[in-house]
Length: 257
Figure (cartoon, helix red, strand yellow):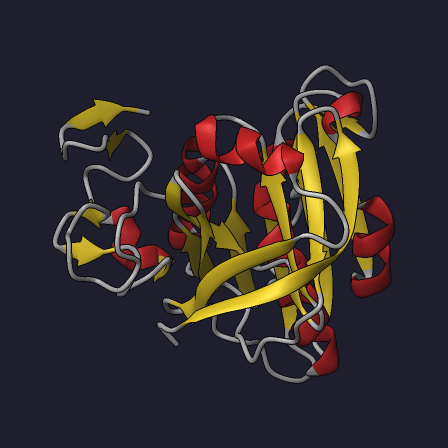
């Protein structure tokens, strides 16, 4: 859906000093892994992942001009967006054993996926990693949709010490792996999944302008992240030389991650 929708902000929750969750007074017919293009007057549009669709929920890291401007939004304000857009995750089937691996705000779309996976009666394990305890969030939300939740922190301040790979353990009984978060983390997860012949999907983040596959600003190889993705099959990504190493800036120039 590419028409602009305007809706009221139902609630604003500060997850930590740099991350905010916004619930919108709007239910959206979306699939986990799809995204919306949020519009702010005078600044433009940016893609945002969908953390839930009933009501529409997005969780935002404040890291640039656009997302820092969103700090000013409060309950009762109105916000405009287009979507849902893009290709989402493949939902697991009944009794499939799935592993969801997220880092940072990449855990938000995985929350939506976990909710729908449980609705399909899949068995869901979630691994959520952060650098330190103060950057964690969503634990209560995740506990509601996971059969097992494992937390990791790089410094060991909460949960298992180390990155998400340290918490994976035996993967022989896993039917599918899904991942979203820092791209180097996802590249390591995809590599492990491909080497073990486990079906895997990863949700990419790239600089986007149009969100509908026209401008080409979000390319990875020959693929448009906004239209062919943002969710891609792990085998496909494993063959892309840019994956986990480079991205493109606003001019289209390839730069290191």
